[in-house]
Length: 329
Image (cartoon, rainbow, N blue to C red; front, side, top):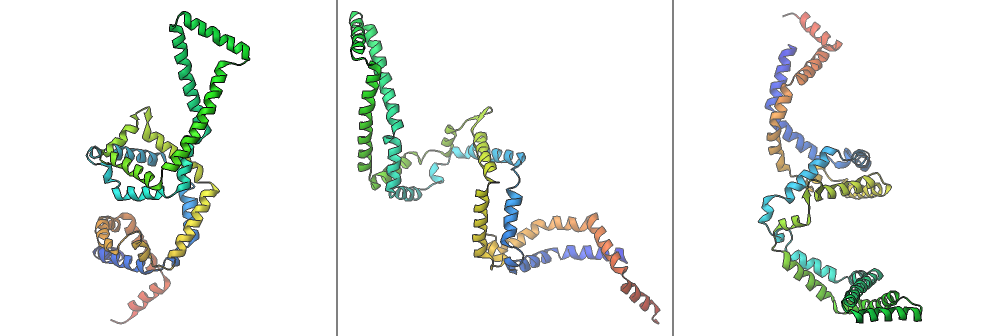
């Protein structure tokens, strides 16, 4: 009798699998999120589960391979950059950047008005002048020797090195020039001008194929840009994933999200992802072979048999069978 019941249950469950799975999804979707999940559960899942363990080598390899496939896919040769970003997005971004006067002026100062730029320009001009003078004097014959003698006499008379004097002069004047250049740039690069320059720059590159990005990357075995980028991201991730800083941000983010959705049903939360209830039927169809194989599997059969044997082994059930067998027929 137990074997007959096991077979019946497997057959019945197999025939009703689609209906039961849809009904189960509907029931589950109607339950409130807070009934089964708390904010602390999510924090433990992310902090103690996901962030506690480093990303596996297999996953890192998959990420690098997928990035390589995407970046070097042949379709990138025929698709322009404007397919990724349209003109309206660039214009909005350019307008936004142009409105931030302080940030724009700070950028100009960083590029033009800082001491490092002045020092670099001073050294560049000094070496250029020095090379020119040396080459000119060497080719000038007697006149060149006379000029070198005059230089030596000048240094002895003034007790100053002519090279140092030249560098000091250049630095003082170049620093003044860079400050003027910075002031002019800040004055003439208005909000509209900055936005116009950004839009104009985009117009020059938007029709280039996406594969143009490949020119800025190396794809050599011993110098692979994708591997370097992925490794750098991993270093940052491993440094941050266990830090109190990231865990504090994770906790605050979860509290914010949970506060917004704790009263929602699970179906409403799924819809916001978005996972629509219409996916239940295709999902049920896709999972049908797995469910059928699970129902027919030896482990499921053994568990059903064990459950029925335990059921019939109960004293009350045994007694009811004895009473029925004693009844007159």
